[in-house]
Image (cartoon, rainbow, N blue to C red):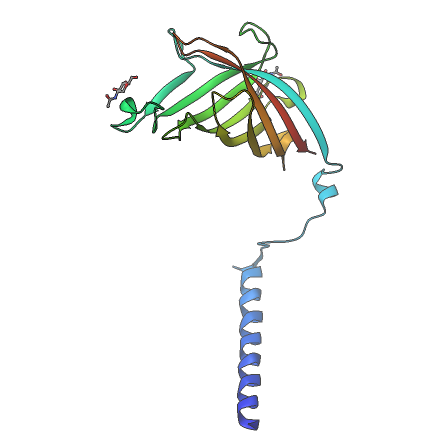
Length: 198
Ligand SMILES: *[C@@H]1O[C@H](CO)[C@@H](O)[C@H](O)[C@H]1NC(C)=O
Ligand SMILES: *[C@@H]1O[C@H](CO)[C@@H](O)[C@H](O)[C@H]1NC(C)=O
């Protein structure tokens, strides 16, 4: 009884020494002090008050013409036979404008891809970055990933993060198709963005 408790306290002590030795090795590699992880004060990182912003842009998926911004890059052998185009992957660099017209002010671009993810219904997986190009937002991005049931009136997708002025972003977008040319496949979609950021 006494011997086994001695043994366990001995091994605990050995473990403790080992851990201390291990940590001091992490801190001083090659004699240089290195910090792998530490707790930061958000204020010092410039993160003051989290705020909720709303933006509205129009997303133009240009499939036709000499300069498409939306191109199919992959599909399965069965994709063309599928009534929902299941398996197709489309790469996009779509303009985001201030108004419904493509000729209106360019606010940024939606870069990423969407994939036909529904076997029995038209449902896309959207995975794109809204890269803004105007004013103080120039260079900042919002990353969107979500399910787009294209034929429904309002589709909601998640904002999973961001960069620049949108660091630590979270929120959602709502997409509403404004124009759809069934002949060419070109589409204009209104995106309302609701985002918490600093
Ligand atoms: C499917 O259709 C696309 C055009 O819509 C074509 O580029 C592609 O080659 C077709 N794929 C197969 C496997 O037939
Ligand atoms: C946005 O930033 C890029 C690169 O930093 C710069 O070339 C461009 O002129 C900027 N656009 C606006 C509208 O400020």
